[in-house]
Image (tube, rainbow, N blue to C red; front, side):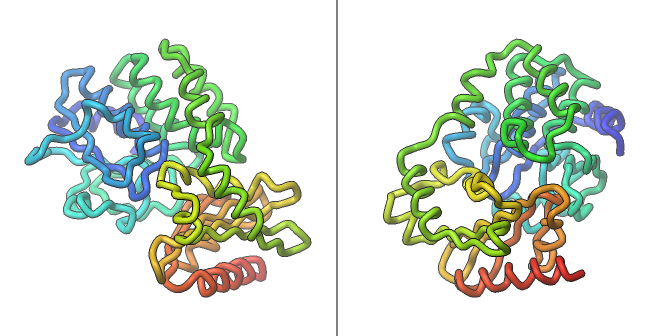
Length: 315
């Protein structure tokens, strides 16, 4: 389904509930907020399903948009969700009821009745902008939400997924009239002191392989407890390892609970297909950024990632 067809699909329906993914980032939250505001702007009833894992970094964009208790939607939309395993607990009951999935991940599972997918977009927010502009004028509130989606998913336009089209979309969103400075400062220039202490611990325990081109960092529950860090303090922490000079493949392993680790893998263009590596552990994503959940201790997760990387590199 094209962006125009997705817009027509939305205009033919009403009473929307919009779903975001587990461990929500700026792309899924920004897309949900932007779409919800756009639908309301043209007279539709629309809400976003509350995501209990959303941190205070992103919840302000959802103020006034969350579904009331007992709300029964007629149309369910998922944004930036590629797989059934990424539905939060309170959204699982909607997995087989998703009418339209809007996404940009090559690992999309096509769980919805209809899917609008563009793998070439740097962020789902790019695709959402294309859809929304077919049926609604971009207001400052919509523009801000979608700018959050686009800018956070490409690391403020420094990740390898950034294209000229990404910049054009960002410029168009800025033209809607919101002030981008507070958004950029909030998401790209501000770190909590706890976050800085965590980065110090990660650097101290960093493992370098392949002549320094592959780096692994390990974020344990003990480290989080040691500095008193909350979820907000570790937003996008997987970007940290890629800042080390010479690193082409960055591996971040985070202990979610005893015996369960989350992998975030980021690679330079042409170095290694991150999605192919993560697919070997039941995950997925993009060629340059992907993730997976690994059952086992941190040591077992480390070995599983190293083995998967070698398997993909050796064909």
